[in-house]
Image (cartoon, rainbow, N blue to C red):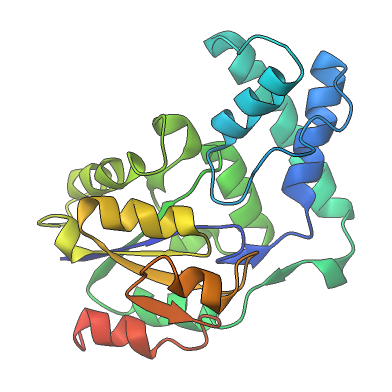
Length: 229
């Protein structure tokens, strides 16, 4: 069986910066660090690593498991608040996403997440945009120490759910950053890069992604990869 793994931010949705604002507020509340993510790369990275870099930049030690759990819980509370209060015109499901997900739901293909978001925050975002029903599982920011390491985790979870995925050659990774492309390439999966995030088509093409599209309303490459399944 084929497995398609979707990133969230910049690929499925644009939250109008709600996630980053919630992170900034949580860091200030818990550690007194103001604007602590300024200069910290975020696109395509794992939330725990982004947080670790912000703490390191402020000269603070990393978090143990209990402290990370407490940070995540407060962040998720503030994320719900930010999503609820961000002007609706600054939030959207990105072009072609619902049509593609509806189409895939009617096919013999497994669909899941591969994202740097914490699992809880991932589903908060998806629920806010009414996309959660399309996704039953995935691999998330707290599951590994690098984005690339999430791909075999996602395959294992697909198999645990009864999806007979032979290996990475049966996997399509859809994302909007070079990190998504690198993750696919490291394991021999196929990368589809979509220019709805912070990287344009030229930057994504330079990664060597096999497929680059302007947005997911161009779903023909996905159907070709599926082989008409």
